[in-house]
Amino acid sequence: MIIRPITDSDLPALQAIAVESGPGFNSLIDDRVFLEQKIAHAMDSFRRSVDAPDREGYLFVLEDPDTGDIMGTTGIEAAVGHRNPLYHFQISHVRHRSPELGLASQQDVLHLCNHYTGCSEVCSLFLRPQFRRANAGRLLSRVRFLFMAQHPERFADTVIAEMRGVSGDNGESPFWQAFQRHFVNLDFETVTRLAGLGHTRAIADMMPRHPIYSRFLDDAAYRAIGEVHQQTRPARQMLESEGFRYTGYVDPFDAGPTLEVRRDDIRSIRDSIGCSVQPLEHTDATLAQAHGTHHHDTIAIANGGVSDFRATVTDQAVYLPRHNRLLVPGHVLEQLNCASGDTIGFTRLSPAAQAAMPQEVSHAL
Ligand SMILES: CC(C)(COP(=O)(O)OP(=O)(O)OC[C@H]1O[C@@H](n2cnc3c(N)ncnc32)[C@H](O)[C@@H]1OP(=O)(O)O)[C@@H](O)C(=O)NCCC(=O)NCCSC(=O)CCC(=O)O
Image (tube, rainbow, N blue to C red; front, side, top):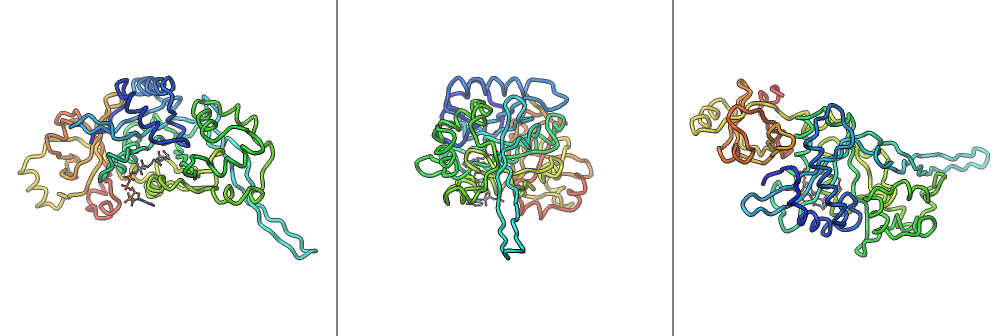
């Protein structure tokens, strides 16, 4: 499995993914012109020299190098909300209390806001069901943190993820239906498509102008607030294990939770190691084993490139902390387009393996 920047020839696969991911996945809309522009924008973003995050959008694909199949996608927006405003509902709690009447109630109130303008956003995480296999989803999710660790100047201090919210088998969102009925007479597919195409301001013009007491929504809409789509639970679990947290901001269309974290607190960034790489010889493995540094952890490993970025996964690497050097099999070097002595970054993929890391490896971070 190789992760690389998307390119023109991936358009048919991206279009298939846009169809397979369905409505509610509004960073990938089934619209050929939109997808062509998205690829062109990503290619330009990877080529651009950057000293502060701006409008760049990085979109990567996961490829099976043996077959050429595109297995999935993963992306990062460098700074959201500048080109088109990004809206959320902020949930605040109010308490009504009357000592005279001896009554009290606690209410949740939704306020439309632009709280996350300027943050970086991880997005577009999708593994095609026919290509599901061990470590593919983890690599897709965590590779973005390796890229951020290697190119911090390209990203903001806060990173968010807008998780896909609840929708039914018919593709309708119970939360959106409440707004469709009273405010914006567009079905969920149409509204998420328009939002994905950048018309967020136009939709916001039609949304309620005053805070909403969430208990006034019908039960299905109320219950959807802050909940993820059942297919999105693994995506949420992976981000939460990286330190992402829900702090009460939800998507205005499906009420899916937005998770946030300080970039430097992301576990895969904190634990990533930058070092030189060398081909692994049998003697190295024996030597490392003798020094207790040979481990069979599964790691994600990336070259230091941007437009020529490559990442993959291996469980056959040997890290030599004293030399700050990673030894990998020759075919891994080839997959990464790396030569001996190049600088690479790596991070462990599985939480369990991270706990088992030798101390001296942790100290070398
Ligand atoms: C998200 C992925 C790519 C993940 O791939 P897999 O499902 O193969 O992952 P996996 O390796 O089986 O599981 C990954 C982690 O989730 C845990 N896990 C699995 N099933 C779970 C469940 N039902 N509830 C809670 N956790 C669960 C596993 O134990 C594992 O945790 P450990 O690693 O701790 O062992 C896939 O599920 C997918 O394509 N989903 C449909 C598309 C989607 O909803 N995408 C997110 C949209 S929202 C979005 O894009 C923004 C978010 C983002 O970009 O990250």
